[in-house]
Image (cartoon, rainbow, N blue to C red; front, side, top):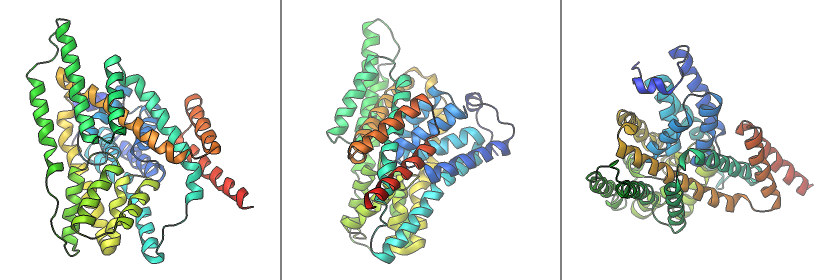
Length: 407
């Protein structure tokens, strides 16, 4: 096993043994894989509670930096955060185990739902369950934003940038542009203020190079997708989802646009209704939203295509985390990259807030759900309960609510 870098070792408490730390990683992310409902923002909140507050694997500032780093690369950010945390705790075996344990439960659940969908022609009726769960998820995300905001908002520039990014998000601007553009704007503002104050904290040559890199990073999104309709083959399924996993930034809503272009318009493997059903399954099951790939794979080619699509969708995340770590471990040492990472963190928190508002519009549908959300938020702040118990309580409340209505 390769030993993590010196900086990595200093960033976390020393475990009793490599096997013990790997066991910790396995059980934590296996449990999260079964219970992490609510999408990336909720996943990040649950990981924050577990690895920062309860286990103290990383500091608050380090955790925020990891969020920024995972938002810099394509793929599902919360899954990449799990993979990265596994590496920091248990080295290369931890990288693999954390990712597999976080993805595996969701993949199996989605695979079962896909079988039911194909067999019975409709999605399982689970609205009664998620009536109570969704308000709790909203509270979990709100608590994460509240706690992380105290670390991210280091001054009026960060707050102002977050407001600009949030407005841009609601105007429908591409999340990739908001994330990188926000980081560049934050850096430029810091540079200008530093110049006005007579400082020299940022090299003026750096930002044209940064903007050029940002332009280059958008090229994969501008490039053409697979042209013409094609018969379903396992090789083409793998390559299609490998490409998607390598270029898609943002949430499941961003993924929806890429999936529709490739699978509905170009390859004609799905209808719009099937695609929306697939994305819905990814939204309400635990674990990564990107397990939508499992559902789609099963629809177009059975269980073999489902497994290949899942592997291809998540494989780039493992590779990218392994590649970016040697760079990420030194980001804070360079002044201009430290400034940009602050900007990424502020922009990422704004995007999480946008997701919170959108989820809130769906989850808080009446006075009863508002009461659930407010109580859950208050409990999380005051008593700091494990969010898993609150999710289970929400599910029970939803069940009792609809049981009483039917009775």
